[in-house]
Amino acid sequence: MSERLPRPESVRGLTVGLLDIAKARGDVFLDRLERRLSDHGAVVKRYRKPTFTKPAPVDLRQQIAVECGAVVEALAD
Amino acid sequence: MSGTSQRSETEGAAPRPALPDGIVAFVKRECPTCALVAPVLAELADRVDLTVYTQDDLSFPAGLTPVDDTDLAMSWHHDIEAVPTLLRVEHGVERQRTEGWHRGDWQKLTGVHGLGDGLPEWRPGCGSLSVDPSLAGELAVRFGATRLRSRRVELASLEDEMEALYARGWTDGLPVVPPTEGRVLAMLEGTSRDPQEIVADVPPDLAPCSVEKVAINAVMAGCKPEYLPVVLAAVEAACTDEFNAHGLLATTMPTAPVLIVNGPIRRELGMNAGGNVFGQGNRANSTIGRALQLVIRNVGGGRPGEIDRATFGNPGKVGFCFAEDEEGSPWEPFSVSLGKPAGTNTVTLFPGEGPRSVVDQLSRDPESLARTFAATLRTLHHPKLLLAFDAILAVGPEHARVFREAGWSRKQLEDRLMALLQIPGKEVIRGAGGIAEGVPENLEHATLPKFRPGGIHIVHCGGGAGLFSAIIGGWVTGAMGSETVIQEIRA
Image (cartoon, rainbow over all chains, first blue to last red; front, top):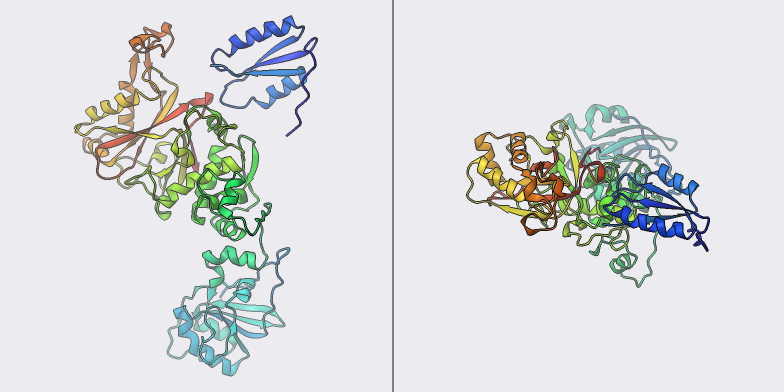
């Protein structure tokens, strides 16, 4: 298992991925987060898992790792 | 007469003791064929250079002063599989071997004729103690031939081994059998597969799991070696993308793998398909499912309170495995209904909760009984939630009799249940019946099935008395969650 990166000092200018796990109303929470992050100067990108019951596919994980400096995975019901 | 064979040298193994030249015999008193040939050995002792190794009793054969092989070192190192075995050895090298008593072969091997006057021509031998399955692991350890790669864990002399295993987090809360080297090697005798073969990547950590690791957990669960092929097949099935053991472990729902065994192996292992089929008391039923769960815990790293987020869980999460009663069933085996040829040993994994009882003591016709099943199946998880879950319907023998006598096939019952479980949207929309839970209001005028096609798995099991059946509910079904997975069991 690889080491977790340190928390970013600031989100300004940072590309932040928001990963919707495909559970009901997760998007409501993520929409709100997107607004808050944008207000703080972050560039937000949205992603979605095919199903909440399985880990995110490798391709999606790679894509997020390449495109983002931080990621928020949201669980909601 | 078999060819010569010698156990190959294993790295780190004790050196193989040399055979004496001449004729060498391996015997044990316990074997009637050895007793039968004792006079022949006495004849040979007078005429050739004979060495007799005895596996169990130094006074046998009487008058021959046999060499002590009660530690089985010679027998084990020279691959003695049966007694009596007769070898011809030249310059320390085995040239010829015969097993059991066969006059012609013995005469050819020894060059002595007229052996065993009055004895039958031929008698098969008995198993050598050095290949006794109950000793196999211990002997392999004793002679240093272990093939195991796993890290050895040493306990302090004052540590209680049961407490130590619990303290290290390797149990499901119940005591486990300490997986000593001897026990693991004995367990591995239950399969012909290479101990280092990778069986699957076990979730949630996706840890590569070897046959050896499965064997260790099977020992801990209390399995016998002959159960190991079922456990291996169950691990393979559990770790498929279709079965999705990761999601099943991580979910808040009270579900876990439920194992259904079909085929002749059920009887070979003495599995229970009858009374108390989902309960305690049968070793194979109780330990096979447990072994799978211990693999997920100890290899995959799936532990309650960590990745396992179950709100309630269920007692079957210790392990839930049973056999179908094929012999008493009015229908073809469950495995056949899933497309496997009859007579194939299979284990089917269903993502299930604990069983619940269905009581109907009055229905004597299949339509009435089908309606009882439909009414109870409808309540699964919530009477107003649809299409989200599969189920096992375990039909008990007294209920199955109603369908047998009426000539209803499994398919007929399944089709009837599907038809009875077409539910008007207005009964199940949100708010209907004063209950907020339900399907979206826009489905008010639709007719909705409780189950997807093929979502009801009908199996036959249970005790012979009691007009009962049982339901085992699933969790998120299909590609979104878990599919039922059937796996063939191979030796």
